[in-house]
Image (cartoon, helix red, strand yellow):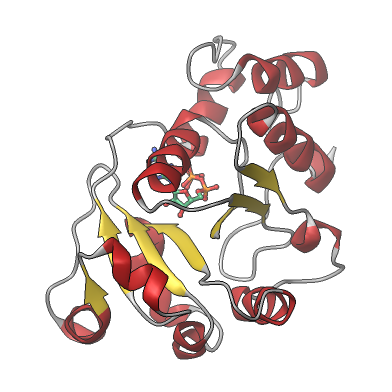
Length: 214
Ligand code: ATP
């Protein structure tokens, strides 16, 4: 199964297209969207936890294979990816797990809590994002030499430990830009599914800077 973590503040077509291409290309039975609760390695979110979860649910509704997993949002306090993957591994002992992250997130991997342990739990699928290049030197460059693969079958033949880089269709959308556009009074139509747009417009959750601070 694929696990697509992110702050999703808000979710947009850049995330959804990436997930869709990967589910097809990697022949994954399921892609789990897992909104981060209180991300330890990122700044706090603008929309509340519940709102972000509702937007992800609206975004994936009706799409076969797309599933929402709200465990990190429901957990009090920070969630570390390595712990979440450990739980998933216990729940699904015989299934390969593929953690999907963007290239920008991959470049920050060495700052993650117990990041080397991730490879005992899951494969890493890195989605190319506009403006970011794969490292060729340093810790991550070496990691790619050691664990990188271009064969989809490698992700099915073992449960964890490989890194697959996919050049996803480049949609230059980011949550940060979507939020500024909305705060400037513009319409986010065609950047995200209508269900998500409706929640944003009805609740005004990005109309001011930070919903959680009121
Ligand atoms: P921000 O713009 O605030 O940094 P974001 O758009 O990167 O937010 P996240 O929720 O942090 O949103 O993203 C979750 C994951 O999706 C990250 O690993 C990120 O790299 C990836 N991602 C986000 N936008 C795109 C995109 N347009 N194309 C491919 N991957 C993306």
